Amino acid sequence: MKGYYWFLIAMAMIVGALTAMQIFSLFFIRDKVGLENPAAGAAALTLTIGLGAAAAVYPAGAVSDRFGRMRVLYGASAVIAVAAGSLLFVSSITVIVMIGFFIGVGAAMFLSGGWALITELVPEQNAGRSLGLTAFSTLAGTGIARLSGFGIDALNRQSENLGYDALIIGIVTLLVVSMYPLHRAGIGLSRVRAAGSEESQDILQTYNSPG
Image 1 (cartoon, helix red, strand yellow):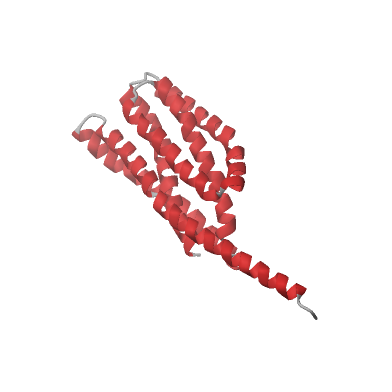
Image 2 (cartoon, helix red, strand yellow):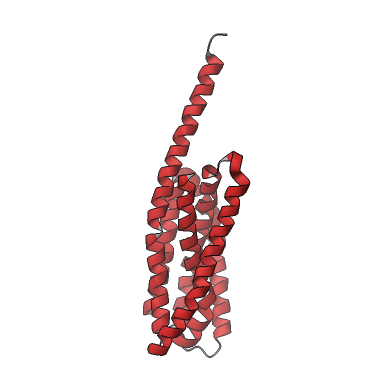
């Protein structure tokens, strides 16, 4: 179960980062890009993120089956972090929408690899309670993202767009730091698989033992 708890921490961080990008995208496009119709730009960004997620969600699941959950999850954090970090250096809505595609790819990698990992880490006898904790982790991440709005407004009052730059840096930091609890979750996964292998061997030896 310790591995599962570590994953919940990583999940809250990654969900928080994704939620912050979703919530503040309209204001970012309006204030930093200066688009006359920021709602249209935000809609295009959302559409592109959805396309990226749709394109990657099934392949990401297949890759996690073949090469391991943790590699996909590390990749998800890295892809989203690089995509989000690049927003510091762009002021064109076209480029931002293109970046959104890669954010969608990273989000799909996280969803596919994350839920596959959950199915392995959650113990059967406490599945309901454990999945309830998963929902709590998601809510915690979204809550933290929404509360960050106060800090963004305060920094923007100090200097133009300073709050948005701080938001992006904070998102990237969250995603990079999330790799540590992901690493700890991976150790837990290895222990779960090792225990399952030993149990299977015990059952096989009992079955094959002379009656």
